[in-house]
Length: 417
Image (cartoon, rainbow, N blue to C red; front, top):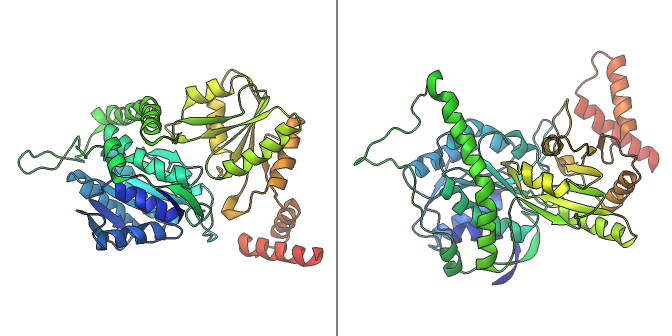
């Protein structure tokens, strides 16, 4: 059924169609509308049987999901930003215990300074926690990935994060196709846990493991993630055959075959990138796009094959490793090892800064001309940065850098006007 609907509501309806048995929730922007919608559906009986549990924190939300999953329930939660960091200990516990929890990450910047707008800092901060990470380009894909995520999680007995851009997707109204319950049931079987707390068949889950076996246990987690590299394309193909549309997978190519310059990105910015690429290709530019749909496990072989003929790769990063550079670009360089393909990192859209077609066109023309630096920051006000750093060198009690930067940019804006 086609609906003009908010992204958060679309995700909530997708989760409901997956028949969760326990939903644990603590509100944090921009994820709140998802769990609000689910609470209403549980209250009205639209999701039944299901227990909706209000908790006192994000840490408690995932902790309750861990207990529910270990007891054999299909469990779901959602969070963002500081909430994901607050539950970090439980995030590692869920994956270490091999519990197939599905969690929506409504991607949002991490403070300090406080910022509620979108970038990928939160999910990237916990990229190596052992969870599978799937990234949605639009709200239809966000809906579809949740249905795939439950099947993927339960097949491997591993937790899955479905990452969708906060506000840009969660609060955007788009037309999406909501599948029927019968169709989802035909794709997603009832939950049959690999491990279960059962008084009639007692086991210990989460017992201490010493040095003699800890490396092997961690390797098993790695081996399961590698299994996902084969399973994710299979589930995506099965989904397309069942639902009549493509979603997910490891990567997605857009005019990248034979292109000299390939732009790589994750999430909603891909739509804007494709518009700019279309305009440049109309002028005869040899440029294409590679979308990373699965970030963990990282699809090294698929990326290498897709980019093997490129002359340069430009990675648009919505997060970055302070003191080092691009997070996604580092994985790209590993995938392209030995091919000697220049890989450029462009940090963009941090804290919700708009990534405009004008800025991207200027950036891509620079790349096509072979003049792009290895690391750059889209629309960075270098003058303001230099002035703040100079003030810090001159004045011992220079105050918080964030406050000084806001003031400097405000003064610069007044001078321009």
